[in-house]
Structure formats: structure tokens, C-alpha cells
Image (cartoon, rainbow, N blue to C red):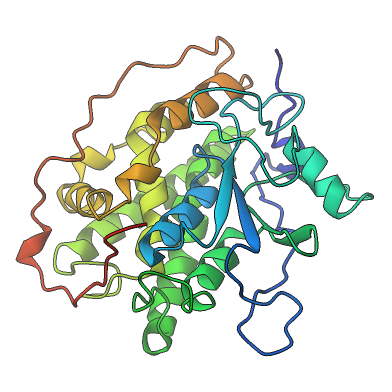
Length: 325
């Protein structure tokens, strides 16, 4: 099968990849009378285990202990003409809420005249039968702050008010240069656009590597949403972005501080349970036929993210972690 390129409408005249903004931006709230009120078992996540943006929401859901309060479905890793589907396969969790066969069906169920992109993650309201939000950065903040009444780990704050300026500064640097930077390399349609994105990517990784030499996390001794947002790119970097997206100056394993930081985050309770390398590698290498025409999925690299890390040498503020997701 051939892929309808996800980037055809997102490349500018210079050949640079420009990601379009998300479309549904409603907010779940604990406020009395809110249209989208915070309630247990009212909301459902639609995710891809391959997608770094969706991965953020699964990690936050797990760390907050919300598995019993917010259900979820997982799409198939391959994405062709029908977009994200619920075709059966290992790790796929079918849509038990709407019985949709594709994410396209779900978007049109919420808005029949919708003509945007059919992306994940999606936060769905079972009561009003509509999409609340499809912007991952906002979904993780809702999961973190608005569901504490139902969370098994309500004391975990990933966006505390006192640290927001620092968190925002890291997010503002990491998103365009690293999170989206790997896509700007891989989906570039000109040499100049690719090299510009490549240089910014590795300048940013070098900056983070230097910072982590003396800091446990991005915001000093505090684990925050900025770490979750960076983690989902780092864990995909060596198996996918290094080769598939031509981000091949250095691997994460070649950065001592970044690699040990990656291992510490991976080893946090329930985080590794959200990582599925079959879905990750299968999606990129099989779906992106404009980048990898053969669809062959590499067997490597060998990764041992469970091996000991050295981050305990650096001070960390207490992090509330759940016994159960």
C-alpha cells in the first residue's frame, strides 16, 4: 500500500516542514457548572503507541494513577490511506466507546463537516459524545491538574505554579528544535531545510546534555512535564530518528548525561509499560513509504534501558510516584 503523505500540506515553499496546530481546544475543569466537568469514567483517550505526542498522555495518566478513571483505545501502528485505524494487531485496543474503525470516523462523529487532520491523541467525552481536545500539551495538563479527586497519585504535580516560567522556557526550546525538530529533519523536502533543522536539533541536544551534567532534571532537582515531553522523543531517537529521519550526527547513547537521564525516566514506575518498540518502529518504517519505500523495519539497535543509571549522584526533590497506574 502507498501512503498518503502526512506532510504534503505541511511543507512550505522552502521545503521546510511546518506542523499545523491542533483543532479541538476545550478544557476539562473542576469548576462548578463546567461544560466538560472532571468526572471519573466520563472521558476516553485515543492514542497511538508509536506517536510521541500521544505517548505523553499515557505517561501522565500512568504517573497520576488514572487508569481506573480514564479509559483508552490504541490504534494500529500502520497508517496508510485510511489514516489511523483500529485494525486488529498486537497491542491494538479496539474502540469500545464508539466502535469506530478509524480515527477519521471518530472526528466526523464529533463534527460531521470536519476537514482537518485526523490526529492522535484525542480526549473524548462519553457523555456529550464529542472530542474535548486533541492537543497533547493541554491534555497532559488536564490529566495532571483536574482529576486529582479520582487520582491514586494526586500529589504529583508536573506543572507546579512556582516552576511554570522555567518549564515553559524549556518547552519553548525543546518543542521546535527537538520534539518537532526530528520531524523537520525527516520530512524536509529540500537540502537547506534539512540542514537547518539538523543543526538546530543537535545544538539543542548539546545544550540539554550540558545542562544535565549538573542537574537531575530539566528544571533542576524537580521532575516536571518538561521531562515527560522530552522523554518521548529521546526514547524514539536511536531506534527511529537517527536512521529513518537522518538525525545521524550522534545517538542518544553517545550522550552520557542524556542517556542516563533517559534510563532514569524509563525506569520510573509504569513508564516502561507505555513504551512499545514494535509499534514505534513499525509505524515509522512501514508507514512512511515516502521516506522508506521498502517498508523494511530494522531489527536493531540493541538497547538496555533497564541497565543502571548514574543520576542518583545529583540532587532530586521528592517525586511522588504511584504504586498502581
